[in-house]
Image (cartoon, rainbow, N blue to C red):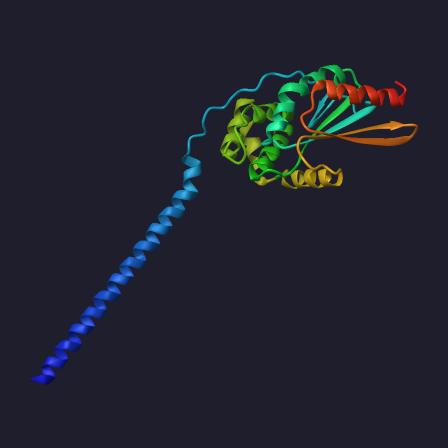
Length: 248
């Protein structure tokens, strides 16, 4: 009789252990499933999230455009801008100074102006926006992309320049989207954007926007760095001083 009781107890414990193991397995499967669904959601959500409104950029007249450069490459003064599309002060320069500089000094052959990114200075979106602008340059519309990116700046690393929004900008300015996507998705200009950053560091750039102005006096190259979103008057003073140094 006692043996029968012992066997019943052992059987009951085995059944209890079996049920416990089964619950543990089900719990593990449930957790794995929930985790997989969460990961899938995080992957898929960015492609489902609404792009939001795209603001069209004002039209700016630029003459003698060559990819990311404007003006006469033989101009006596060269100005290279190191910028970040997410930088609010870079947008200030774009909105308040750039067009006047183009009209007063670039269009008449005095200044050769070149835009360079500063890599992913502020974040990943900075680098991707720069890559998008260079891809637009392949279709002769670097500056149109440059303008619409700044026109849609809403903050730093807040999703203003997701890949989908950058593609929407490309559509807005009339690019061939197949060609743009091919360039953008392949990372064609990733190394160029990284090189922009290296060039800026070698030029002692510490913040954006910064401008490297170079010109020649008596056969010697003179280099000046202009920091910050300076007014047109500040650039005018620097340019006129350089011209006076050159005897022009």
